Length: 369
Ligand SMILES: Nc1ncnc2c1ncn2[C@@H]1O[C@H](COP(=O)(O)OP(=O)(O)OP(=O)(O)O)[C@@H](O)[C@H]1O
Ligand SMILES: [Mg+2]
Image (tube, rainbow, N blue to C red):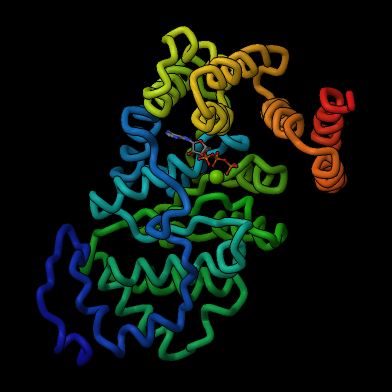
């Protein structure tokens, strides 16, 4: 306890240390730095939050889950690519933080080495949790003083020594606080076996593991993840892609309206665009980018027609990209077209057979010269 003698200005709110001055002492900081956290928290701005007024139902449901200590300890938000999971996870983190319920967050990303390494998730979450929860900090400090290599050990050992044991050692009488740990895009971690293993170990944890934490995971329903989650008994599950289409359409219309309000589109155009997007926010996002970059009103009208004529491919993001790529290629010089063709063929060779078919269609409109 000697390290707390320099601490001042504690502000305890429901057991959470809002002013984490106990953590600010240099010894405490040195100890926690052994966890070597990734720059993966929601504060690093990898994603934007939901546009105000959208996703009200799901965000309300998540906060109800978070506020209820008796709810299922794991929440899996499943959704196919582009359905808006990361955006929801970002808004959820912001609300949790406002309500002093956020233990830590990790937004996995295949674009950064430290964010696609599944072995960095638990130490990073532990680092943030220690800043929120003093009884946990006291326990993890002892564990790290005894073994400074905990953060680089196997995931099973990490979960046991960085979470299970310290949390188990917190006496009920000491604190009833609990926190939500948020993990977004687990499917973006590169080691598939280790990722599957995380879910399986979480599933095998005793209930004491969840006495102070609940875990929220948002990710695509990849086969290896889905299979493992299906075996998990203590979970709540919400599938974004199975949500009622009308509810998603309303949110997408709000988003299109909010993002394109200075483009003077009619209400009917917005509805037609949203129908094309189906349940995919990423589709609407790409429509917005395409329309916003129109150099003038005539180009805007023509781009709008391009998108609305694209009826045969409703719900297929591949074909939207085809249209955009085809348009880009039409304006190119012959040598630029060759380079683009080489580059796209290279992407096709890496992609799955469905995308290969869709991308091969791309050359049809521009093979004329
Ligand atoms: N509620 C929303 N308000 C505003 N924009 C949104 C909303 N939901 C999604 N978007 C936009 O749609 C795009 C796709 O959303 P997001 O990245 O959250 O999808 P995802 O399900 O996480 O996709 P992936 O599986 O590829 O990670 C983003 O660019 C985001 O800005
Ligand atoms: Mg995402």
